Length: 214
Image (cartoon, rainbow, N blue to C red; front, side):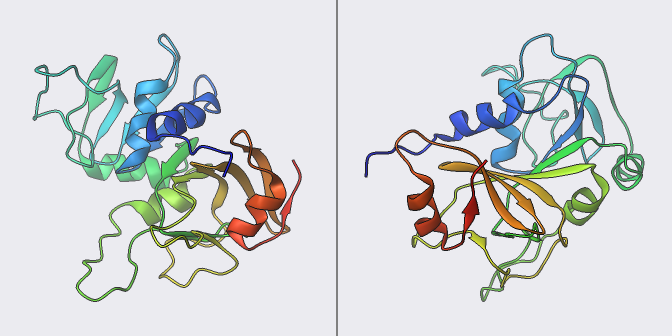
């Protein structure tokens, strides 16, 4: 194996590179929250949190946390000048009303056609927790997924057809992973980029699906 996986921070930086200036963006719970730390200083990207925040900044420095100011994942955040917080009903109205340019979500599975499964694996004892993911997946103009490509058992999370309960149908436009960035479409997967040393042929073997060249 001559390639090395992207770290979580490297993956977050890769996602941040593709967010255009002026975009209104929701970062989902978990790994996607790291993207906030890699947006260029002075950028006009406006971060939204479904619990009712607009204008979030990066994570606070150690010792500067304010636990009255948290994101949807209960992590302390900062508020940029001009930022605001408000009732979560207003926040969901923003999500459902098509006012978000991009949402970045985690996932258990994504199909080649862009179906998203990110709220329940069906495993015994698991607690279903869809939260606002359904609203985000269909309400944002673009839905991106950020995740590891493979499970701990080595199975691909990018699949021909999702076997977990769906969050949204044909909603994912891009999949950002620790090994490659892929575009989803009705015609299947297309390669945007991959880590150094990983060929498209080897990536196809890992995923188990055909991937068109970018």
